[in-house]
Each structure stands twice: as structure tokens, then as C-alpha cells.
Image (cartoon, rainbow, N blue to C red):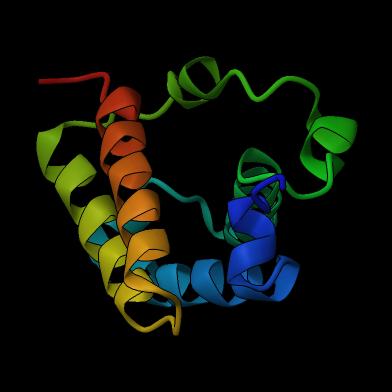
Length: 125
């Protein structure tokens, strides 16, 4: 028996849409973190993060079809991401995750990835 992907276990695209919408609601109210997102890019950033996370966790390859290989570090180089901004990002992602109705094992798996990803995007002390 094959184990279903996390994408399937948490409810597919609707889960990631809700998670990312909640995350960006937090970002919108956080001026230091919000400064990383130009106004014209906020909706686009939400769309891209939703597709990326869905694909990463076993969903459709829409992100790759639209944007190519994720190259996350390269895509984030133009933004000065320091430890406090990393922590703010993670704070809002964890708050969004805490609002989601999923099993503790899935929440822990997502949280581990978010901590790793947040640190990986940091490009300033």
C-alpha cells in the first residue's frame, strides 16, 4: 500500500489556498515583513506560494509549468532577508498553520519544512 502524499492527506489545493491566505493576512498587518512585498506583487506572491507548496507536497505541477524550476534561493536574492524577517515570516506561517484543521503529524511535518525553508531564504545576518 502506498502512502498518500501530504497534499492529499490535508485536503489538496483548498488546504493550501486557505493556509497561504491566512499567512498573507498576517503579512499584511506586519509592516517590517510587508516591506518585502511590493504592493503590486502581494497577490502574485500569494498565488505563487500556494502553487509552490501544493507542488512541493505532492500536488499538481502548476508552479513548475508557470514558473519553471523553483530556484527559491535565487528568486529571493533581491530581497534583504535577515534573521528578524525570517522569524516574522515563520511566526505568521506558524500562526496560519495553527488555524488549520489537520492532524498533528501533518502539522509537524509542515512546520519542520517551514523552519528549514525560512532559514534557507535568509541572505543577511
